[in-house]
Length: 359
Ligand code: CP
Image (cartoon, rainbow, N blue to C red; front, side, top):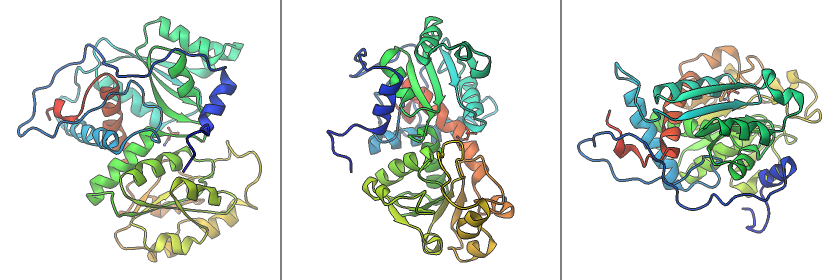
């Protein structure tokens, strides 16, 4: 574990974006204008959420993670009704500030916001004044000047969401920052595992692939270990260094051993866009040594589930037929992302938990 005096990587990165003097946004926060649902019968246990932002999983408590998961379960039930829309964010404005490509996360946030009745601004980096040299801070402050209540940000720089949380008054939601964290992906992964297996504690979860450059791997590790899972990182030694053991992962470079007892095999693609040098001889060699193929799948537990955050590189980290096989829950992850993101937006708007949502 990290020493408390050491700075997190995202803090260093954020300082590179802008020097630190910032308003103090700490302390309890209460949102306004949220709607009330009639309480379900029998009442669910009271849960509590007091955060204005969702910046990472590392700083969340186990109770906070469970509150998001249980709130998402309630929103999933809402999503199965004929009328799927609720007024939770009516009158609120959400900016989707995606400065790095995304399909799943961007679309999922947009639909979640629509389901919660928010007004939405979809910022397109390519068509923006970022191209003319405007800084992230100035761009975001201009968006806030239009009364943005929430900013959902994806950025290639680790720490960009933390930086915005310090310089703006809006609620900030991290939709993926560099190789640091991807909190809503971890929450939807955890939600999917819990839904499928009925628990997280005691499960063997193997995360296989380019761990070094993966924000999903880091966020998954925090979420799953806080809930009692045993997490193994596996891949080439250049992409899975032993240092991850200090964060609570088991590290191995032996793929057969890593998948043999796994209840969940979560595959990661090779993130060429973040690698600064060649980390292995060729994609073909990576596939033969670490790719999940039919032969390897046959040596796993018969009920082991296959997960992938996407985008998939078929034929590289996963054989095409395995991506589509009955044990793959890859598209269910995408479906669950909607309920999880509705839950996150509901909670950062001042919602307390699932007890406020009637299905
Ligand atoms: N899982 C994920 O973050 O996918 P996108 O990059 O398409 O959002």
